[in-house]
Image (cartoon, rainbow, N blue to C red; front, side, top):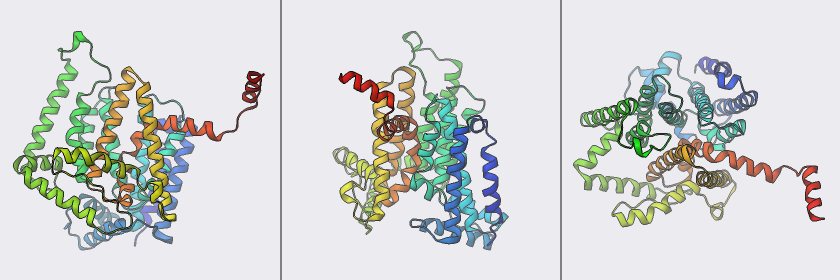
Length: 423
């Protein structure tokens, strides 16, 4: 075991995050980021050297397969994440701690992008609080501190959304290219993210921060013309490569679309068997409320129930022992964030409402895709992390404000004013 590279990443990570201007110029954000990052490193050390915390068995499986490939100098497994780990292990030596620290570094970069998005959408209050609400969620701390894919999935989805918005808000050179590259990389990390990339790239390219006036409804600017051309190229390229690649190759979302086109009934049968298998797998945390794809009526009937169980389980009445307290607590946080996000969306108007609409649409789209293949709230804890940051951005500020009012003591001036009103 060669852990030197992991320790090098640990110590250098604090210098890397301070390299970014958005962190340096705001002391409260910098302190919050250093605190969050330090806790993730402590968990990585704990898992590598002290005790393997519950829920990290998949991480050990990824590490073992990558180590076997690195030792044999042969890339045999199809999963791209395992290939990535094996290449790193070939160069730097096989180390569980190194794999964990790579995940922490990916998480650290996601924190930087998160801060950049806060600045882009003009969030001025509670920046440090929002960063801690994002980074200190128990599942976020645990699953991004072990050799799992979640850190990378979050990072590249976040990069796709950020670069997509930079096409329209404070335009950045190369934003279109970086958005497409982020979508490409994202599709290699999970089949569901490949499907999301298929429709999310065109939406981000064609999205407009302001509603077009009646006079400009049928006019096409040079910028919009370029975006339309890119959407056409993206769609045709994806369809072309999907007919010439295996399921684990790029543009996997297009592969699924191509399968649906060629054999819709066969595809639906395969999907039904897969989801049925998930539901039938025994487990204490199974909720088994999956979407029924047999008909439009069955989809409309089971979709809300499946989403509710995926996002909010375990419900309070399902908490039977101490192990259920953490996922139950996280479900409560997600419920609160969604409620405050919807309230803020209803209050907003103009460009701000269009921005919140985009972020919430992405959140519920990602949530829906991941809910299709999830049948227990243990796995849902991990999958919910991929889109969790979106509702933190929209509803997190109001949630922090609400909790602060409930928990902070009433000031003397407030007591004095209230007593005068009574008199």
